[in-house]
Length: 231
Image (cartoon, rainbow, N blue to C red):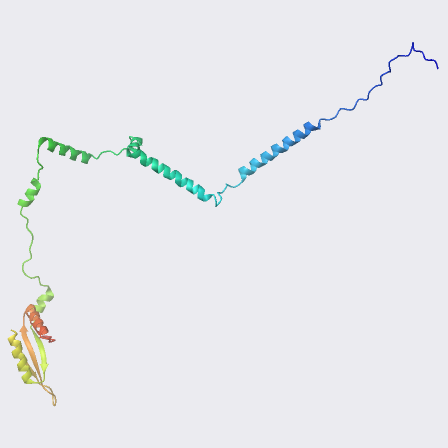
């Protein structure tokens, strides 16, 4: 076979290359998807926190919170004590400052005037009280009610004892007369077949107070006198 080198090229002819189809950027789409999911999660978390109940302090953290509050309160109190009353007075507004009492100011003014002028206090009012005479109504005599007047019109005797023996009655009368009492005895006759009794009496009395004194004497002699009204 005869080759024609004059017409045929000496270099080999390049074959056409096959171009591959362009690939879709998958990385960019996946990044967008992840960003959207992350944003959605953040929105859901914020909504959940805003709508949830207030957070309660755990029981184990409660003592820590209380201790912190006590520490802050103690620090504030200590700061106030260290500042003293002067700083509190400086912070007090002028409107809320206590106003002086006009009566107290008048008293202070008079005291200063008396000290400066050497004027002694005037006690004329007390001197006039001592010099003045006071009449006090005094009840004279004894006040008697209607019942007292009615009792005063009666006559009473005191029965000291009632004895069966006449000799005992006579002896008791003598004993009472020695004590200064107006004593006597009377015989009470009984019915048929009954024994007579001898009553030892003290009185009669028209004054109730004298009768009460005689009764006290009989009681001191271990007797139980019986009060009897005669009229």
